[in-house]
Image (cartoon, rainbow, N blue to C red):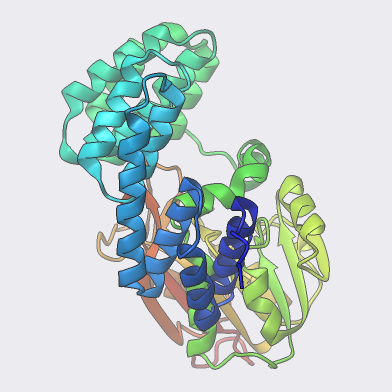
Length: 420
């Protein structure tokens, strides 16, 4: 019998199914599909997705074989005489994602020297050089890059560099870069940059931030989260398992800050009804098109009247509290729509190790990290038990560096003030 060779579209479809199975915590099916796809002739992008998935599944043998095949293809492709800057940057991106840093740097520098203004190579070189402390070399690269940018590209490029420097703790260099580039900004934009990056002024409220941030990248949100290794939905799923909430529970569930619906497939098995809410209209539109929720509501978690009417048996909030400095109102408002004894399961960026005196800290990303003790105190004040379960894990990656997170579960007290 002659077997028809799978097309690139078919391999991509199997890869999608494998990732979907992994996201739904069906690891046996995910492994089977991933191994099947890895044995086919996949494109470079799908091959990389498969390597990452196989690594996550602990399938070291298939992952290593596929990784070697990818690197051989990169070496062959990079020798093409007519290769352009965009292709070099893409190959460097793939090499970097597989941990082949030396190859990645060579390819990215070739792309940079080709004088393209796309900026992908330079952005990836940030991730390559900053962790190694190669600031002087990086500034030389970015000085050349900004010089060849035009119009609005220039201030955007400067802000990208400044944010990266700040993320790695080089605040003095970041300020110096921003001050040097001041002529590229109008006065208002420059002051806003100072406030948002260095905290030199009042912060925006959640609704304003969402309008500017989430609506702006709603269409690429899922892809962006995949690229940074977003682990929030899996942490939520693991916590539900720890507290004994599983398939067939038949709960009324609120996904508070649902985004584009990444948690929905994990919630559906334990729910009779899943309600999603978010402050971003564009995010809600994407959820609507996916058809993953029974109801959707535009909600500002800081504003009680905008929350859906409960009572809910379970409220989950994955990677949402990072956008709030003061979490008191959010906790009180969520308690208001939970039934007594209902569960609140959520993630935070974890500042416990740093232990800031305030219990929280604003990070260079603009997001907030909170300590476990601070969260526990705010839960108790809002009418919850102190955390009934919690665990730490990597929430996501930024500039290839792990961001520590924590999943927490608490119950609404039957009588406010009762012992948790």
